[in-house]
Length: 147
Image (cartoon, rainbow, N blue to C red; front, side, top):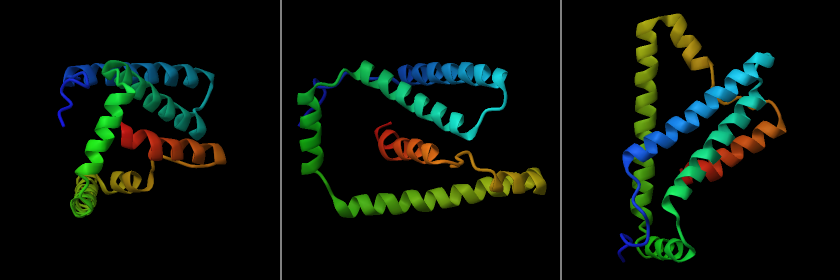
């Protein structure tokens, strides 16, 4: 099936502009939150959720998908589904992730052992409460695959 007529094209520059808009909004929110005091983990996670939602909304607005086009895309995906290929791709990406994380840690160690320890021990996602858990769940399960 051809989907050239069903979906509008999004150029790379449009994605970059959308990302920069989301980034500027997040920086503005961080500045406002930091004026009131220290930024909590929950606020950081809420900000991540807001950025994901904002970016996804901009992409959907740009694509303007219809029910018919999404249904055709889903049926095409189902007809071409190859479980073996999907498993190989997932394994390849996991190996790539492990290798790249080791390279990043090695580069951090070259910069300095203390920096490497800080780099390994600090996590960008910290879950302190049930609210944080729900926010991270929504980001990881729903927004990340779509984005």
